[in-house]
Length: 370
Image (cartoon, rainbow, N blue to C red):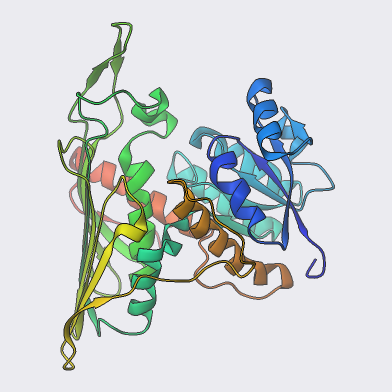
């Protein structure tokens, strides 16, 4: 396969059309060959927009096609488990959107099948490659912090404040994978695991601050998913971390990461509703450098492909860079740093532990059963 293009079929044409399609096309080793969606009008519209005539509405037959090498699962979370396992058992490599599943048990089973079949697998935690977070990741790997001590991540916005319009209704339903613990904080959990290793214990408060919303027609939407959460995480490496997220913070738009260690500190300030390129990165070192402004990552795709300038452009670039870093696996070489179904399972264990803790379990040990 190293000398042939890797043929990709994408299931899901929302985020799949907006981000996955241009990301795969930015890396010439992949060929976006076909798309699938259960709604005929959606897949026809997406096919026309992307210039793809090979479309399907039947994902079960789609994943079994002999002419596809990789299946990219970019559907609602409650479909990930069945579609990923079916694709793996059909002999396909899989890239799955995050969060990987609704439950830890589903995530574990997906990982087990991947291991049983020996197929390649990746998870779309592309946030690791955003220009601001990639720069921070590189600095930590280079030892900027010395021995890391403490990490704090805070995201505040007003997307679920009662004064704002409703988002897609599934996002308000916990049994459909909704809520910002799954939708946004999962990126932060994965990112901290990439920086500091294995999480071993979690304590949290996860809540629905606004339990009902009124639809435009006057009917009431019952909200079961979280709009606010605060997690404390202990890592095996000794790092103590907090992740605070709220989408009912009126008048605020903030995305902030703070890291502290024995030799240095790093602070990344950005906004949720902007782009990573708007962020500022500052460092502080004990070796005489003191406090200084640091550059964001300037890494771009090797092909020189032009990334769209729309707001999703940063996600397209980040995913394209992740796809570049995944390429060695198709030649049998390791791809450290590329998140896979194991990383997806780890993140899901933290999410589920946070909910258990919030329901009265206190500190939840993630090592039980090791």
